[in-house]
Image (cartoon, rainbow, N blue to C red; front, side, top):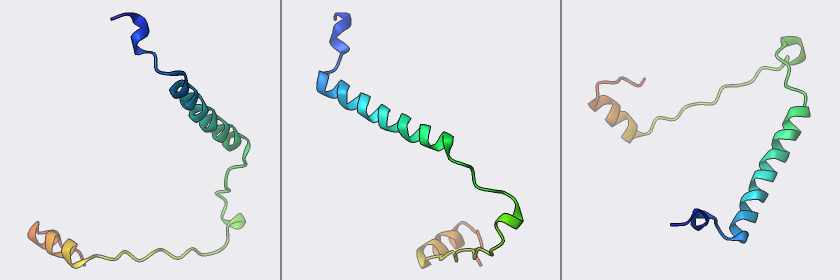
Length: 70
């Protein structure tokens, strides 16, 4: 096996480079964005928590494992 046998086709190499370039561009945009604030006065609204739905199958499995999901 020669060292050159592992090199992929130019089409595959180009696709890899384009994928890396798009990820780098996305990372560069995130670097310059301002982060969300952690101060309460800048984020005063109340956010409701989502309800967690437990299916019957999950309930049966939890009961079989002696985990009590109430």
